[in-house]
Image (cartoon, rainbow, N blue to C red; front, side, top):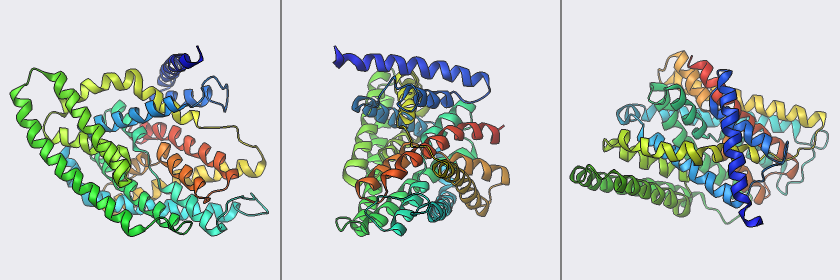
Length: 391
């Protein structure tokens, strides 16, 4: 009967995320905060009722893909095009400032007198890698919050989405560069070629799908089920190709697939079909899975100071970096703060980068728990701060 334990896990996660979501809503906070807190409480860090399994990981991955796909379908394509250059500057400054912030924090805490690390690389390389972790942005949490407060299609909302996609690409390049110093198996030139090839593939396949889909949709308007399935298949294929063949985040492929549907003028119709599956099953498991990643952490005064310091730096550097980039591009101060706040969440993207660094010996095991905790904290505070700055 143990093989059916996943059914109990799902039931517990769905009930807990909904209950805490309603509780946080009563305190005028987005419901996604409750879902994230539910994962922390259910996981090994508190009650230990649910463990992160391969099944939960796979379901959570589908959940974030579905979330980004629907976000793409609800995107204002004209507004997205208009903020392309601005998004590049916002993402670039929003990567450099957190990178320097992480490097500075590690320079203070990484050492025999503070926190002794067991990483196989040099101290400088480990310090830089923590900065690379802080450059990551998990836009999925922001998307859910912006949808909840009705600001996804705002000027700043579109800038956040576009900048987050570019941020992921810059993060991959930064990870590749730092990894190349730890191993000879990685070539920065080949990575850049793969990234360029992916966007060529996405552009060509998106255009072909766009032309065929418009014609087919008009011929069979009343058969929405087949259109829904076809659109989702396109999303999954582009997500798989992005991650498997080109090393680009699968959520990037999912978002681009959604934008293609939006450009075809069918986003409003189809996004409602996917939202049911998303909020009913996939999204709660994805948000809870982030909290489940928190393990028991060795508590000491120095370690507590490190968690507080790196969390504060993670929050401030994104607000300052992305906000500064937005101001340079002519956004108002209010919009700049909104954009910077929307980029705070590190979520699963930072955790994936961290796990790859651990496997390469770029991060000592003593830092894994505290940094993971800081990542989850940034993910929890982002919806709260977003609701404040959009009020």
